[in-house]
Image (cartoon, rainbow, N blue to C red; front, side, top):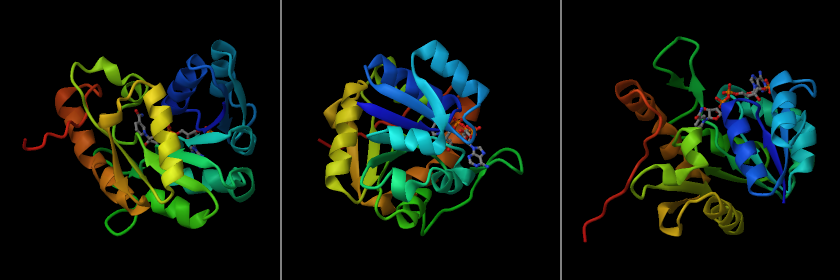
Length: 217
Ligand SMILES: NC(=O)c1ccc[n+]([C@@H]2O[C@H](COP(=O)([O-])OP(=O)(O)OC[C@H]3O[C@@H](n4cnc5c(N)ncnc54)[C@H](OP(=O)(O)O)[C@@H]3O)[C@@H](O)[C@H]2O)c1
């Protein structure tokens, strides 16, 4: 499958490498077609690099992995209403603001979320919030943890979520580990988990941990 990834940071490159390993034709997108990190990644990983708009147009399915506070702007630069119309877009971003140092604050929260903002801005795009609750190394290698653990999907379109679950399973996630929280408003909960995630990271000194839901018999 052709996959576009908007984002050239650690997350974009990690997802991109995994998607290439799985046999997909991957393009990383950036503000500039000359982005050194993206060009280097493309050469090393047998992927491609381009602008946000080129990566969005390339992908039959597209990940968004841009800095949270600039994610809405990145979709505008990607010309999302045209390049992403009708496509499934997996939003892994978090609305974290590090401008005042640690711990970060949330730029959007409580009765709204970044996932909802993107869906409102681009009603013709099928946004699915997923994988934002963990370190990117774990997104693509869930079996590195010794026990079963959980990940979430939020989105308004059932077929889009089913396509995301299928992709997650190809990445090593098990059916029972993926929790469909409901519509895109449920992204509020997964995004507002991040302040706790950041503190857990500070206390434990590693990002290789995740949530495990345990229910009474
Ligand atoms: N790090 C993790 O393990 C992890 C886990 C879960 C979720 N997340 C979320 O994933 C996202 C990506 O994280 P990251 O650490 O890989 O990278 P990042 O540094 O947060 O984001 C890098 C990307 O943001 C773009 N960007 C920066 N400023 C911009 C602007 N003014 N306008 C448009 N785009 C801009 C960059 O564009 P250029 O390519 O042009 O430089 C680049 O593609 C974040 O939202 C983060 O919260 C991260």
